[in-house]
Length: 209
Image 1 (cartoon, rainbow, N blue to C red):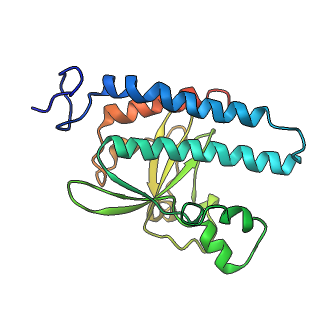
Image 2 (cartoon, one colour):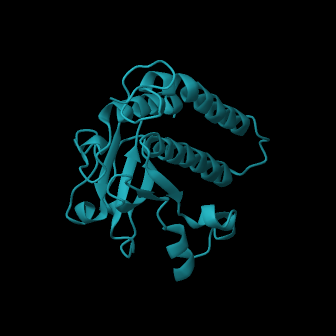
Image 3 (cartoon, one colour):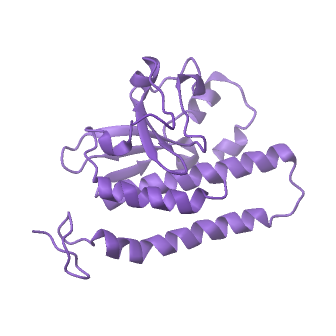
């Protein structure tokens, strides 16, 4: 049986930390870093236009959600690769802001991550969305969305849910009442206790949003 390298308690993976020790080590640090980012943003000079302020604010929320999901998969020993062009070519999203060409639109829509299951070696496209209202449907995507094999992970103030493009195209949605939780996806086989812990992170980070 695998045991925690710090306290000796049961853990899912050999040579790792149990949930309690992992959160004690990483949770506060991650929360402090993100809260510092938000504090710096809120104290920025008031020279931003309302449109620019909204753009930056939404970008920060999106990146917090992305970080939560990235760390969730990493904590479960998944291989995680940032895939979006803003990660491959830093700054490109600012350069493409307002550009409406077909190529620019495809770049903007690229999934955020490629993740690989360490047990099966299967890979998945992951797109992360933050939705305070916990709602996401096919209407939120462009009609010519090209990444038809993508999984959409929706982070809200209370839950982390997941739906595929195929399911969206069939009329399924994420709503506050839906039960399409990330922990129910058989494709990923994720530890539900770990997901609950990251939901608690989401509650703390987004409680004022």
